Amino acid sequence: MFPILETDRLILREINKEDAEGLFACFSNNDVTRFYGQETLESIEQAEKFVDFFSKNYIDKRGIRWGIERKGTKGIIGTIGFNAWLPKHKRAEIGYEIHPEQWRKGYTMEAVSKVISYGFEKMNLTRIGAVVFIENEASNKLLTKIGFQKEGILRDYMYQNGKAHDTYVYSFLKR
Image (cartoon, rainbow, N blue to C red; front, side, top):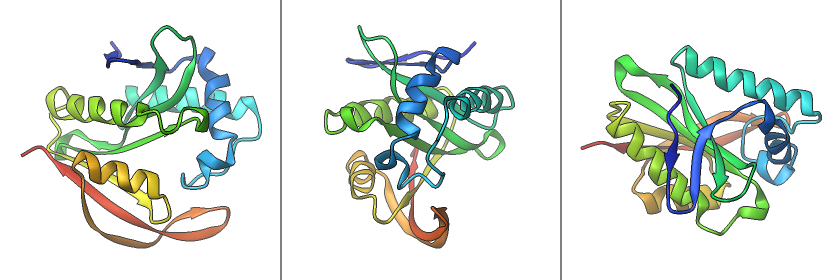
């Protein structure tokens, strides 16, 4: 059973086929993908494949991805979840994106805080990591504000539009 999480203003829920449009709205936007490490989507079919990918990752216990939906509003404004989930080692990496129309409203902070709590309390994680493009000032600031510690730089770690980028690596420990 896929867990549904709730905050004051958001519902974090399973992503389904009806969310392909919302996924496409995010991942076809260059402002969203420029620090994402993947190419911008060009078709709704690509977004539909994301739905299948997220579902398979959850079934295979490699990750979990929630759709971010505002209470009282139909449709997702972004996604959040854990990638590289290794239950044996009690760790995962957090990832998220939100549509630019919803930036600077505190939604990402609200969702990240809830997902971190879920990771520690329900998934029994002891370490939550994050890998962020050095140029992604908003995400770097958000993670630091929440309590992530910067551990170092991964040089030429991610490619975006055919170019290698350095990233910061962060961790948040349960203790």
